[in-house]
Image (cartoon, rainbow, N blue to C red; front, side, top):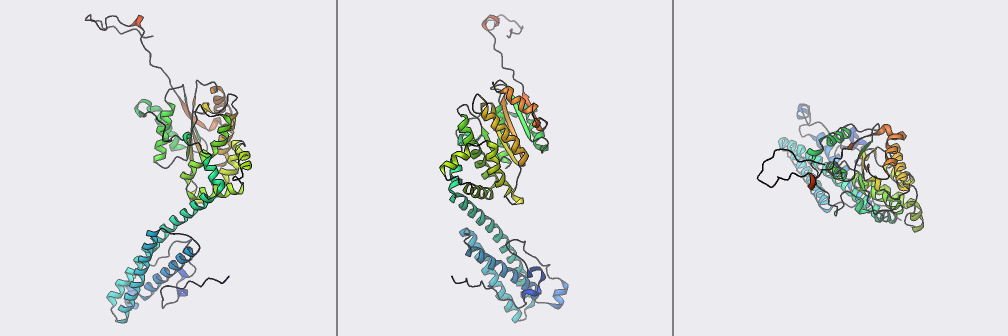
Length: 411
């Protein structure tokens, strides 16, 4: 196979690149664009055409354009609009270079200086657009890599969409914060100070006391502020096998949206490495304990992220007392997952449960008697059902003309 032809500079510059220390070994793909101080009195006296200043920015433009061409040659596809804008900007630099040379030739110092300054500003604009379009192009490439992965596609198909708090067909009553000011204050205080010391907020209360309404309110606020990694709402119609199979898939599906394309690409590579496209392997992997799925899939995918893309993870789990089977196997698996996740990831949990469930005792023991008890904050919602007067105690003169200021008797 013949070697590719070298990419030649698009602009010829009289002063050699070696003269400029700042850009001699500059890598346009990894390092910020070097800049030079605007010309001052010294340049006006000894370099009245701003030759060095102009040559510096023309070299920078050349290096960026060659890097861009090399990136395109590697198969990175840029947005059509971005590609067009980059071409317009670079053509403008080439045009300004020609005008600057013409001004130097005619000894027109004033115009030469003006074109020199305009060259530097256009090169900066080219760099800004090039970096933005490169990020967009690489994200698109990462997404395509992920979606081409058969294992990743299978993982996404295993998601239980209705488990998300934001599933389109959920109808959740609007929350009035005025009625639960103390709960709002406790949650806000926890969110403000959340750390590895108290990574769990446990909200509990009687059935139908409004836990899901409060949970949705908090989750929506976090989602609006790009602070919610994932949510999972337990329902009565899910059994242990279904839960084991879809829980991790559902959680990482939402995490992919939160953490971005790099996380999706990491997951894709791991699912292919685990051979999840193989039905036998897939069935065996998704039947493993949740903490094993976490350690083999989620933790390495997160650790593979660049440091600047790693973000704290907030996961909301609503109604864990409805988790799986009467024997509580699913609940035990979930508790192992929570404990392992807190040990391996920068993660915190907002968890709700019912105090009137048969599983309330087991849940209470986990949050108050196990080693993670010291890491749990939260509160119990007081439940005081509205009482209704019975006929025998209802005031008989309520609909008569007789006046009686006494209060009715309430059961």
